[in-house]
Image 1 (cartoon, rainbow, N blue to C red):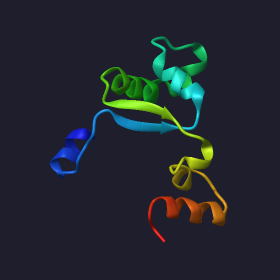
Image 2 (cartoon, rainbow, N blue to C red):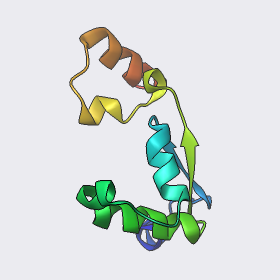
Image 3 (cartoon, rainbow, N blue to C red):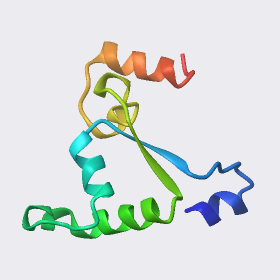
Length: 91
């Protein structure tokens, strides 16, 4: 992904902030081992952990209310959707 962005001449600051509204998910990235309960997310977790240990991404906790990715991944109310667009600078 970083190579593609660089080829497109998009400025990439490393480590890239990975904003997460789930502290347990951040803990999974920081732990070097996985448990039997983590098997359903094994491949994505390994991918994310690889980039975490390579220091190309840095997980940062954000409150759910400020997680702009929610507008793309969850059903949110119209006022919340408008608020997210506003935070992105789209009016």
